[in-house]
Length: 202
Image 1 (cartoon, rainbow, N blue to C red):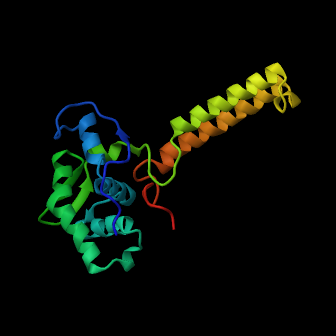
Image 2 (cartoon, rainbow, N blue to C red):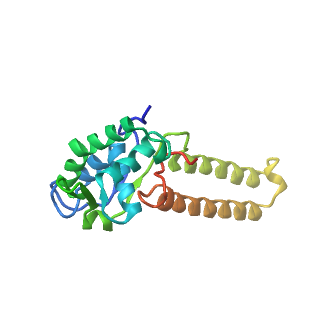
Image 3 (cartoon, helix red, strand yellow):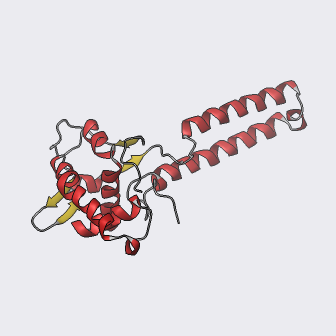
Protein backbone atom coordinates (compact mmCIF):
# COMPACT_ATOMS: atom_id res chain seq x y z
CA UNK A 1 0.00 0.00 0.00
CA UNK A 2 1.48 3.32 -1.01
CA UNK A 3 1.62 6.35 1.24
CA UNK A 4 -1.25 8.80 0.86
CA UNK A 5 -0.78 11.40 -1.84
CA UNK A 6 -2.20 14.31 0.15
CA UNK A 7 -1.46 17.83 1.23
CA UNK A 8 -1.46 17.09 4.98
CA UNK A 9 2.08 18.39 5.40
CA UNK A 10 2.74 22.09 5.65
CA UNK A 11 5.29 23.28 3.13
CA UNK A 12 7.36 26.37 2.59
CA UNK A 13 9.73 28.06 0.19
CA UNK A 14 10.75 31.45 -1.11
CA UNK A 15 8.87 33.20 -3.88
CA UNK A 16 8.62 36.66 -5.40
CA UNK A 17 6.79 36.79 -8.71
CA UNK A 18 3.37 35.88 -10.04
CA UNK A 19 2.43 33.26 -12.61
CA UNK A 20 3.37 29.58 -12.85
CA UNK A 21 5.91 30.01 -15.63
CA UNK A 22 7.83 32.82 -13.98
CA UNK A 23 11.57 32.32 -13.41
CA UNK A 24 10.96 33.19 -9.77
CA UNK A 25 8.29 31.15 -8.04
CA UNK A 26 5.21 32.71 -6.52
CA UNK A 27 4.09 31.53 -3.11
CA UNK A 28 1.03 29.94 -4.69
CA UNK A 29 3.23 28.05 -7.16
CA UNK A 30 5.43 26.72 -4.35
CA UNK A 31 2.41 25.62 -2.32
CA UNK A 32 0.81 24.01 -5.37
CA UNK A 33 3.91 22.00 -6.20
CA UNK A 34 4.77 20.95 -2.67
CA UNK A 35 1.22 20.15 -1.57
CA UNK A 36 1.58 16.74 -3.23
CA UNK A 37 3.84 14.11 -1.70
CA UNK A 38 4.92 12.64 -5.05
CA UNK A 39 6.08 16.02 -6.32
CA UNK A 40 7.97 16.62 -3.06
CA UNK A 41 9.70 13.28 -3.59
CA UNK A 42 10.63 14.30 -7.16
CA UNK A 43 12.29 17.49 -5.94
CA UNK A 44 14.04 15.63 -3.13
CA UNK A 45 15.37 12.98 -5.52
CA UNK A 46 16.67 15.54 -8.02
CA UNK A 47 18.33 17.63 -5.32
CA UNK A 48 19.88 14.49 -3.85
CA UNK A 49 21.18 13.30 -7.22
CA UNK A 50 22.39 16.79 -8.22
CA UNK A 51 22.24 15.71 -11.86
CA UNK A 52 19.84 14.88 -14.67
CA UNK A 53 17.90 11.65 -14.15
CA UNK A 54 15.97 9.44 -16.51
CA UNK A 55 12.26 9.11 -15.82
CA UNK A 56 12.84 5.46 -14.93
CA UNK A 57 15.56 6.32 -12.40
CA UNK A 58 13.39 9.03 -10.90
CA UNK A 59 10.34 6.77 -10.74
CA UNK A 60 12.35 4.05 -8.97
CA UNK A 61 13.51 6.46 -6.28
CA UNK A 62 10.04 7.90 -5.76
CA UNK A 63 8.42 4.45 -5.72
CA UNK A 64 10.98 3.23 -3.20
CA UNK A 65 9.95 5.99 -0.79
CA UNK A 66 6.24 5.63 -1.47
CA UNK A 67 6.22 1.86 -0.90
CA UNK A 68 8.86 2.09 1.84
CA UNK A 69 11.08 -0.60 0.36
CA UNK A 70 14.50 -0.78 -1.36
CA UNK A 71 14.54 -0.17 -5.11
CA UNK A 72 15.63 -3.75 -5.83
CA UNK A 73 12.51 -5.07 -4.06
CA UNK A 74 10.04 -3.04 -6.11
CA UNK A 75 7.95 -5.12 -8.48
CA UNK A 76 7.06 -4.19 -12.05
CA UNK A 77 3.56 -2.98 -11.11
CA UNK A 78 4.87 -0.59 -8.47
CA UNK A 79 7.52 0.87 -10.77
CA UNK A 80 5.07 1.22 -13.66
CA UNK A 81 2.38 2.89 -11.55
CA UNK A 82 4.71 5.65 -10.37
CA UNK A 83 6.44 6.06 -13.74
CA UNK A 84 3.12 6.46 -15.57
CA UNK A 85 1.84 8.98 -13.02
CA UNK A 86 5.02 11.02 -13.36
CA UNK A 87 4.96 10.98 -17.16
CA UNK A 88 1.24 11.60 -17.57
CA UNK A 89 0.75 14.33 -15.00
CA UNK A 90 3.32 15.40 -12.44
CA UNK A 91 6.41 16.06 -14.56
CA UNK A 92 4.55 18.12 -17.15
CA UNK A 93 2.90 20.18 -14.42
CA UNK A 94 6.20 20.75 -12.63
CA UNK A 95 7.80 21.80 -15.91
CA UNK A 96 4.92 24.21 -16.60
CA UNK A 97 5.52 25.82 -13.22
CA UNK A 98 9.25 26.09 -13.89
CA UNK A 99 10.44 23.67 -11.22
CA UNK A 100 12.02 21.14 -13.57
CA UNK A 101 13.30 20.70 -17.10
CA UNK A 102 11.50 17.73 -18.65
CA UNK A 103 12.46 16.30 -22.04
CA UNK A 104 9.58 13.91 -22.73
CA UNK A 105 11.12 12.51 -25.92
CA UNK A 106 14.43 11.61 -24.28
CA UNK A 107 12.80 10.77 -20.97
CA UNK A 108 15.20 12.99 -19.00
CA UNK A 109 14.45 15.19 -15.99
CA UNK A 110 16.49 17.80 -14.15
CA UNK A 111 15.82 20.68 -11.77
CA UNK A 112 15.45 24.13 -13.26
CA UNK A 113 18.21 26.59 -12.34
CA UNK A 114 15.82 28.46 -10.04
CA UNK A 115 14.65 25.31 -8.22
CA UNK A 116 18.24 24.12 -7.84
CA UNK A 117 19.17 27.40 -6.12
CA UNK A 118 16.20 27.48 -3.74
CA UNK A 119 15.64 25.55 -0.54
CA UNK A 120 12.23 24.03 0.14
CA UNK A 121 11.09 22.89 3.57
CA UNK A 122 8.44 20.54 4.85
CA UNK A 123 7.40 22.28 8.06
CA UNK A 124 5.28 19.58 9.71
CA UNK A 125 4.96 15.87 9.24
CA UNK A 126 2.75 13.03 10.31
CA UNK A 127 4.14 10.22 12.42
CA UNK A 128 4.00 11.61 15.95
CA UNK A 129 6.28 14.63 15.59
CA UNK A 130 5.50 17.48 17.99
CA UNK A 131 5.32 20.79 16.08
CA UNK A 132 7.95 23.26 17.23
CA UNK A 133 5.27 25.84 18.07
CA UNK A 134 3.64 23.40 20.51
CA UNK A 135 7.06 22.51 21.95
CA UNK A 136 7.92 26.17 22.62
CA UNK A 137 4.49 26.75 24.15
CA UNK A 138 5.10 23.88 26.58
CA UNK A 139 8.62 25.12 27.27
CA UNK A 140 7.28 28.58 28.09
CA UNK A 141 4.74 27.16 30.54
CA UNK A 142 7.42 25.10 32.29
CA UNK A 143 9.77 28.11 32.43
CA UNK A 144 7.02 30.32 33.88
CA UNK A 145 6.21 27.75 36.56
CA UNK A 146 9.91 27.31 37.42
CA UNK A 147 10.53 31.05 37.71
CA UNK A 148 7.42 31.54 39.85
CA UNK A 149 8.36 28.57 42.00
CA UNK A 150 11.88 29.82 42.71
CA UNK A 151 10.65 33.37 43.29
CA UNK A 152 8.02 32.35 45.87
CA UNK A 153 10.00 29.51 47.43
CA UNK A 154 7.69 26.69 46.36
CA UNK A 155 9.27 23.19 46.59
CA UNK A 156 10.91 21.64 44.68
CA UNK A 157 11.86 24.89 42.90
CA UNK A 158 12.93 26.43 46.22
CA UNK A 159 15.74 23.89 46.39
CA UNK A 160 17.68 25.80 43.72
CA UNK A 161 18.59 29.47 43.53
CA UNK A 162 16.88 31.82 41.06
CA UNK A 163 20.25 32.27 39.32
CA UNK A 164 20.72 28.52 38.84
CA UNK A 165 17.16 28.19 37.59
CA UNK A 166 17.67 31.03 35.10
CA UNK A 167 20.92 29.51 33.84
CA UNK A 168 19.28 26.12 33.36
CA UNK A 169 16.39 27.63 31.41
CA UNK A 170 18.75 29.69 29.24
CA UNK A 171 20.84 26.62 28.39
CA UNK A 172 17.70 24.58 27.70
CA UNK A 173 16.42 27.29 25.36
CA UNK A 174 19.75 27.41 23.54
CA UNK A 175 19.78 23.63 23.07
CA UNK A 176 16.19 23.78 21.80
CA UNK A 177 17.03 26.53 19.32
CA UNK A 178 20.04 24.57 18.00
CA UNK A 179 17.84 21.50 17.63
CA UNK A 180 15.19 23.54 15.83
CA UNK A 181 17.73 24.94 13.36
CA UNK A 182 19.15 21.47 12.72
CA UNK A 183 15.68 20.01 12.28
CA UNK A 184 14.65 22.68 9.78
CA UNK A 185 17.83 22.78 7.74
CA UNK A 186 18.75 19.10 7.69
CA UNK A 187 15.69 16.96 8.35
CA UNK A 188 12.94 19.13 6.84
CA UNK A 189 14.79 20.54 3.82
CA UNK A 190 14.09 18.69 0.58
CA UNK A 191 17.26 17.03 -0.69
CA UNK A 192 19.23 17.53 2.53
CA UNK A 193 19.39 13.84 3.41
CA UNK A 194 19.21 10.52 1.63
CA UNK A 195 15.55 9.85 2.37
CA UNK A 196 12.75 12.44 2.60
CA UNK A 197 11.67 13.44 6.10
CA UNK A 198 8.31 11.80 5.49
CA UNK A 199 9.89 8.39 4.99
CA UNK A 200 10.90 6.58 8.15
CA UNK A 201 14.51 5.50 8.48
CA UNK A 202 15.17 1.76 8.18
